Length: 303
Length: 251
Image 1: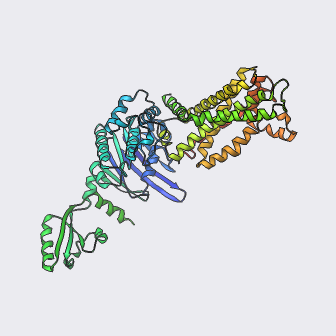
Image 2: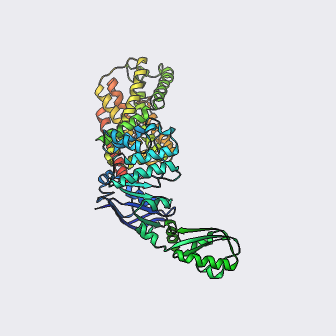
Image 3: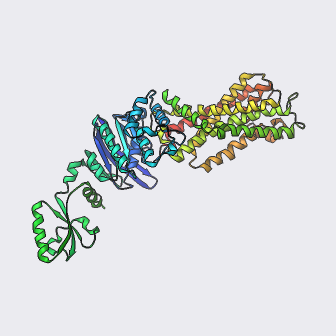
């Protein structure tokens, strides 16, 4: 059974069409990335999955339970880390986590709460009031709150936005462990290296539509070969090399050029042409294509 | 059931942690009303034969405090959670509409009764009160607190900003409580205003509550309890349907 099944979901806010006919199936045990620029509809989609928003049309199920009609069973199986940094200023970290457990019907949950706090480096803050925590610590509590009921499906909406390296590493270590133990993870992020490293499958959303859906490796293969980035100290790019320029080159500095190369053997002739033209290379890098290149290509492609 | 208990506990803890503002302050306000109105009117007004004005006033003030604080609890909790965004913590879990409703309203009843009891304990020293029919005291206190807790829930769901809630409170709840016979018997009013007062559900709550103390009232308490119950159940139905539809909570 699919962990999350999204079928033909539509959603409008007054005049803005946020989602137009989104369908996705996320299988159990996947680490799934939901990518897209700001305003693409990622958070709207997550809110519909979580029951915070209502779809205008279409339906969403979690482990087969409809998020509207069978909302209690659906929500019991779902843990959501919201994007906004929200907290209840009346309570301490432990109080917050105990209450969240209680809302999910769990009473004596301290053992798991302690484990979650330990894994998110929150133990020393257990009895601190939420108000007194730094932004990063508050973010950790939000993650912990989403995990108190050991949900089989975990949704993280930009959990690492504005978060330091240490927390990112702690978080990914813990979430990856949960994924290995069988939890399905859905992640939205603007850090594409993160998505590339963690997600086995990725959907890209643009203006409320799914514009790409594939395994991470298949997506990266869409951009064949590598890129040669050159910075010239003197001279300009000879005509013979102009045709190898990539799309993203236009954004670069005047003396910087990005050339597409299919394999290493192509590098040498390029250097020879440059030498002949009298150009002097100041800096040179050979880059493998990554998710960011795919992302730029797909997002730029359908204007 | 654990979900309900937890939400109730959280809602009670929320006002208890700021008890100076949520319990002590309203008790102080009621005391001031008693001192000022009691002092000014004691010699001039006698509403029921054999009942001093201060004694007449105390049940009214107790009930007014119960009602206003029950309303304040649900409405302020909801609007704060909506504005700070932490309402998601109760919207994400599998809490049913009835669980949300009953936990919020019961916490409001607890606060209303806590403040009411506080007002009563402090003001009872100023007059010789009788307790002719304590069961009516209890029934009207519970019913009134539940009804205003429900109204607060509806107002909290509806309001998007603090000033909208303040408008609800200042232009609806305050006039309705002040004009409900806390400070006077509606029989002292001109016929037109007497008739208007009979459309005010708060009047029946205060009148019935007072009957429990003195065995005297403007309206038969059975009539009052029926009218208040009808209002209450209508509001419950409205609140549940709002929670079910996700009105202003789930967009």
